[in-house]
Amino acid sequence: MTQAGWRQEDGALVRDLRFRDFDAAFRFVGLVARGAVDYQRRPDMTISEFNHVRLSISNLNHAGITHAELRLAAKVDAIVEWSFPAVPPRA
Image (cartoon, rainbow, N blue to C red):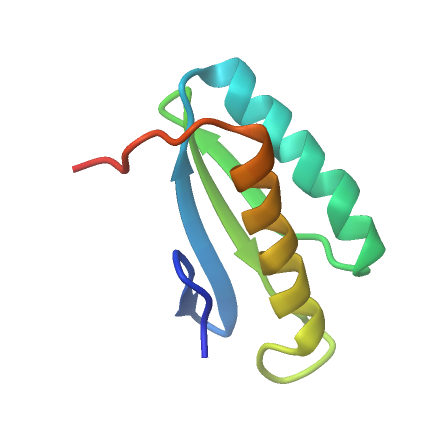
């Protein structure tokens, strides 16, 4: 089961987000990186098109998605909700 806004791809939780500008996207990536340490996860994070971030959370040590990945995804959701204004997804 995935959380709203997330999808499963190749054994990972993946979410695409768009921010108002590059500074906001870069700040978001930094907040996620600091939060990921609490869950001993190192998500793949890519910034493209100056404000688009793709996150991929996986666990290379276990098969499938564990509670740690789901908790990190919830933390990402909280970071988005509390720290960044909504930007509509790309069409």
